[in-house]
Length: 381
Ligand code: CP
Image (cartoon, rainbow, N blue to C red):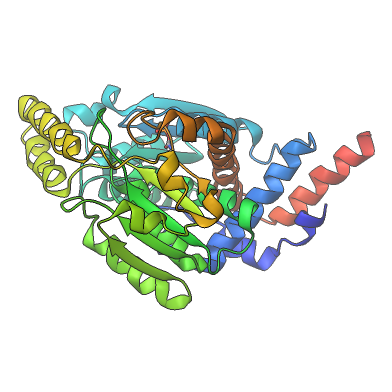
């Protein structure tokens, strides 16, 4: 398999034992390695080859927010590797009774072999929580001289959604090859359903600027992203891409090759939510959510429709969405129906990104292990 031959074991060694908490923590070369490994694992799947690289191991995932795709990707990835995926609702754990992330990490780390976490609702909390879980696991493994590798995978936090943005990168590259010079419009869009996290747009602007794309972020006033992510995107763009922020959806769509219109919450209200959550004030949380929807309703014209798609490169940009999309609000039914299969193919890359993170983080001498599996399958034909 040509893709497998192109893997470099020295580069695989550099990701062995690593956890992905933010794409910004990893070098472009390391992200390239995960991307290339994901392609190999996808090709294994397409050819019907099995990849039981981590048999009989436990792959925990804890979700403190709802999910369809990412839970499915975690379960699909772990199963393909021969692991046992177990997915837990975070609100059912003792975290809701005050057990800390470090304690929880130690308890889960005692018998786990990989750990995924979604904690995305409260600014300033999610990524810190994931880092504390990692510390709890690492401290336990160190103290007990346990040689297990237990990679931690951020399945969406307040800052980043790295398995999403890596899946998006793979889908963009599948369509366009190298992203250098490609114009990406990451834009806010109207939603009447709920105040969505900031992590997807933050993940897109920070990652795609590192891969040479010309990224335009567009949002109405008041919907800014975290300063650290905007600064990172500006600095990443120095490597060859470009980054700008505008307050006009049409301007972002003009000549874009890729459009990624999705909703997120107004920044001041996301900050208000931090205090209400810390106080455990459920009535105030509901009040803030209502205010967020009222604020969104001032911008119902921020929709990805046929007219706006007509502004894009050749009138035919690639429409992307992390899903679920509010059809009729973020995007018209007509635009979505044209891209339904595309957004499913976009989502499916996440299975192989998670597989790559788990296999890359856990399996030494991975290229040789993959060769053995491919050769064994060939012998059986
Ligand atoms: N894109 C995404 O993360 O989807 P889910 O919320 O369904 O996991």
